[in-house]
Image (tube, rainbow over all chains, first blue to last red; front, side):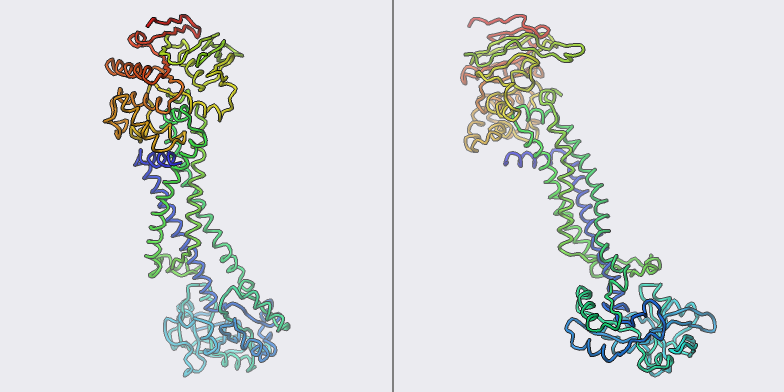
Length: 405
Length: 229
């Protein structure tokens, strides 16, 4: 074994340029793989957190038919019983009752169909970081009559500014149209332009007053200590509160569930593409190494080196290159990761396009030890597998012919 | 008993279509300690005969017996091990491993035989001294002349004390002085280590140094001349 190790180690340095080129390919493959793992994981996590922390939460409770019919009259029955059920549950970080309606937002210049969410600021603060999205003005200034939060996109579309007046028209609980003039108290901007186009926020009491029912709640948003508990807790709550519809984030937002579940899969597809390119590089390099050493390999087999040892020698050479490339690649990958981990990768140039899909313009890569381990193993296995064909070619040589070539 | 016997040895290519006879009905005996050269024109079957004796090729018909063992009857793995332990090879193009030093090249076979490192090193130093390269132990092949490289190859062939050494045109790539020098060394080792040498050559000066000259023509034995001592 010592002989094989020595021979393999020395062989990789006989053509330094070629070995270095191969190592460089492995280094870049691993570094790119780690960066990609980090960026995709960061992107998915930011999207998840953005949705959960802005409005989705981990669990939502609605009237049995609300999510299907979305009618204002479908308010939550017996909200007091719901509060009692939620109080003291250890996995729950916080909850907020929301009042919802769909209507028309109009200014003197333009109009837009919107979802109106009536919130209780103190409750909402316990489950949502939505206030961080306010870029101008205040979070529902209570000194104003009928304050309203509007997105920057809608403010531009309707040509209204802070303090400006807009009219919301929607159905009350009786089904009659009702209108009220609201003052723009704050302007928000999230990373999701579709969300921004569709949502306005008002004080819960104002909306309840206009709907004609002081205890009108359509939704309870619940934030948990960990999103992994959502399914279990939703099931538990469903047992306790059989008269309402209780769903976890994954049921409420199937596209988010797919993103979280498939995010890793997408990373692996990218990784496989990188590794496929790498494997062809290794295959080509090692085949060249075999063809250049036909006489020498023939001699080794002639004097009595077994085919297994000859194959092992070729695979060991690749393994050494993969090991060196792997270590440097991980270091480079972690280095690049740490560069972007704090400041983030600024893709402001594509901010509008990213916002269309609900992604932030600045991506903070997220890398776990597991991802590093998987990347290293995948590159290592690729390197060894790619060396199998050259190794087979080597052992297929006829020593009697090979020594005379 | 002869150390090597070939019995009615045939090597025929394209036997089913247009047969080409590389060896035909060749029966030869080689005794221990012989210093024999196989001569003949190109295509006469010299290399084929050496490949048969060395177990690198299989006869179409006939047998090669080494110490009474028919090597064609050995399984592939056993044949490789048999070569490793019993036969030393010297090739026309030296075929040293360029990344290893002279000492490492010579040690290689013994390491493949899993001999202990101490005795491997001692034996490698001894044979390199015998071929006059004790001052080139740590030189790589690229730092040695052709003659020196072939001496390393001879030392490598001898290092594991094989039953015999097969050398295929060992002086073909050497100048006259290096060729004669190599032959002197091989002749000396033949005597001092009682090593059996069988080598093919075209070189008349080499033929003159051999004690037995086997001449092949068209794969068949043309002449088997044993010189008197």
